[in-house]
Length: 101
Ligand code: HEC
Image (cartoon, rainbow, N blue to C red; front, top):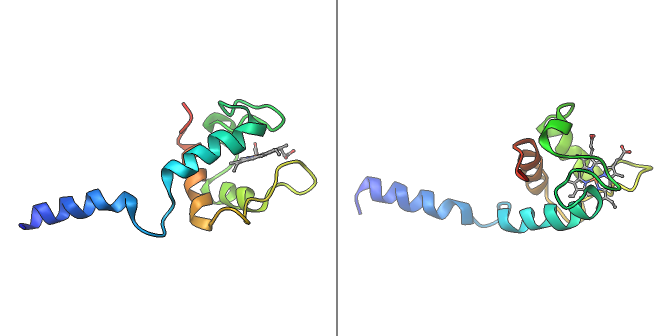
């Protein structure tokens, strides 16, 4: 295998890397679980609008924390029992990059 083919093979294998966030599963979780409170298109419901323009007061790290720890005293639950730090960072990026649009 020449070097270029090897690099291509590695790049194609990368999304399935063991132990990393599972993008398809996380996207499903955002739509179904987060969507159950924030609305199916995340425009808001019981919880507020969490589409990218509504999150301008957050950065990736503050969102990651908020997802892991929830908002105490509100219905926004902590997701730490279900998500790893990497999963939460993935969701933070997904929301900030307008994944739902
Ligand atoms: C049981 C209902 C519920 C579920 C499920 C839920 N949330 Fe929330 N979420 C809320 C509520 C209510 C608030 C508002 C908390 C407050 O008053 O500050 C909130 C707040 C937030 C905020 C802060 C918005 C801002 O403008 O600061 C983010 C981001 C967020 N949720 C993301 C998520 C994500 C991502 C998920 C899925 C992993 C999720 N939520 C699941 C109810 C929920």
